[in-house]
Image (cartoon, rainbow over all chains, first blue to last red):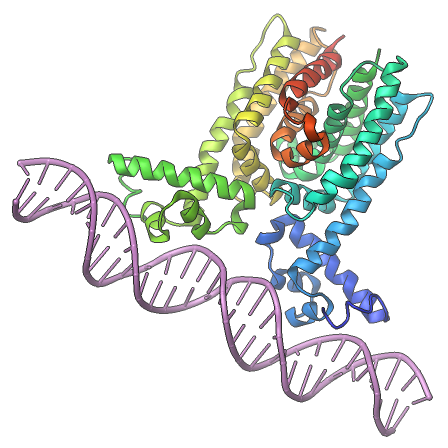
Length: 207
Length: 207
DNA sequence: CCGATTTCTGACCATATGGTCAGGACTATG
DNA sequence: CATAGTCCTGACCATATGGTCAGAAATCGG
């Protein structure tokens, strides 16, 4: 256990440096994945020395673990907000917009998650089959209710959710590709994406 | 230059071993990304010694390069097949199905590509802004023609293509997550995905 | 079956990397 | 301003990793 980490967030310096390190680590891990990242890179990004990093955290794995914990919480939040409503289409489209905003505002978190999943999710497999599955099943049931009440068109709820996840996260995870293909029209990519996805999911859900 | 690579694919052994190495490398690189993979891993996967690997290839980078070259060719193929037709909706849905089949049959290639893009596409940036952009622009123009002729509903062609890419590749790149969430219903995931995506894109394109 | 060529290996090297540690520098507090 | 505790560093270590090389082993053509 790193000397400082145990008494978590006690002093001002501890709080500041911890955040500084986590921010740098997010930058590095989200780009190169866990195995492709080095403590030296994180140290350089944070403007600290390697031993200083290891003064605050037990090691590379520990830093990564904290980031994943925070991430998963943040990740489930938008879906959590999906609740029953008189206007299910609007409710679902609002969810799509929240996810797209996350892709725009927190692309590093999205890429960290993508990297982890791509590599087989060795460190978050339990959460995937646990809290993520539970929440997804719950919301899929809600969507099925809407279908049963004939408020939206019949769609497979789980795969609808997959489509929402994939289309929105694409703008974070594959941003390099999106910008390359769009060229000079890249600037407004999120506005146009919002319009497009809104249209698309409305069409899918329309009875 | 590796002694064998220069006289490319001359002898039988060279052809066999080269393929053996590339297959092992695809397995490793697609899982751990370029920086996270080691020659030792590739050697172990291929059942060869490290120096033997380096007898056939100039180094880690060279192996990765060959894989990316092959990948990009394979990647552009399904989109290439998108041509003018009396039934644009069917034409586009066929493309969606081809992409989904690729996600199912060549998940390693999809993940290799995803890893490369996630890490900022340092090695294929030129192809992204070159051949990929050219082809995508061309097909976007075709789609725009269909819209102008009022054969399909008005959609942003580029973002429609992004939606196709993301929804289909999701089943390869995020397969661990998909299976975790679906649980025991994972078995038929590709059949249900095909049905769902078919419905979805038909709804989007319907006038 | 013999010499020439190709294929393969163990031993080795330089560097990178995760991590440790003794002790010095700094800071908050009485 | 003394000092107890916190914070930080240079030097160091063990292992991992990309890559090399001399020569052994296998293969091939005649």
